[in-house]
Image (cartoon, rainbow, N blue to C red):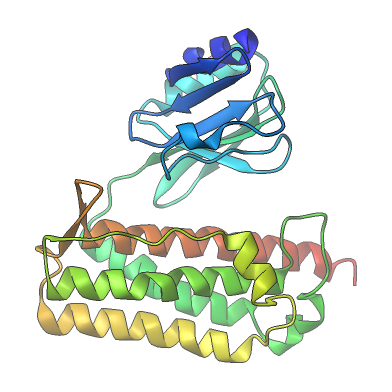
Amino acid sequence: MKRPINFYRGLSLLIEDIDNNTVIVKDKFGNSVMLSTNLNPNTELLAESVITPKVNDTLIYFQTNEILNLLEHLRLNNIKIVKNNYLWEESLIFQDVDGYRILIKQRKELSHEQILSIYKEGVVKIKKIMNSKNSKLYDINLDDKWTIREEFHHLVERDLNSLFLIKTALAEPGKKYNPTFYDADLWLESLKYNSLPIETSLKLFELIRTYVLELINSLNRLQEGHLLINGKKVTLIEKIRDLATHSLEHILNIEKKINKLSGEY
């Protein structure tokens, strides 16, 4: 593991050695990933927040506040990079020395008004692209992890699963909260998202976001809304930001798939 360890240390990420075949890589924001040459690494050593990726498959997420330095380091090491610059963040996507796919993000400062605007905008954007004209493309797999239909249902699922957290933060600010972790791939397969109709879920997505915005506007508690999760204060506005940007990332990806498939079918 010497080669990947040196690579990640060059990115200013923290390395925790487990054994000769396994390391845990951490960023300064608490995100952790186990990298291992073992087929079945000992996941009992890990906290719930740690994921075990697969080479050339899982996209590993880290955060940084030094993206320009990282970009220079990657270029000096002749690493091929895809650079994105969005309203809410900058990001770098690349493969490490062992073939793991890495995405490093640097968040941009946004006002509360900007965050709520992005949250609301997600409904407009998804309704625009998930229409009957594109329906013939929903189930074509582009050698990607999910089809358009499956990725859309995952997007809605994230908002639905977060609704109770949002209401708790508004109703009981400061309450200790234990989030429920779930396997998105398992849900996708078990709930048969590959054949689930789009229309009802699209209406549900719009209703959830409209409902949340009405709650926030009527209660005027956005500033004080927060929860204690694993001993850390998580503010309501940060959760709304995560949902807003998560959905837009998927919407952009769905839009790219539709544009590519439209030229082929």
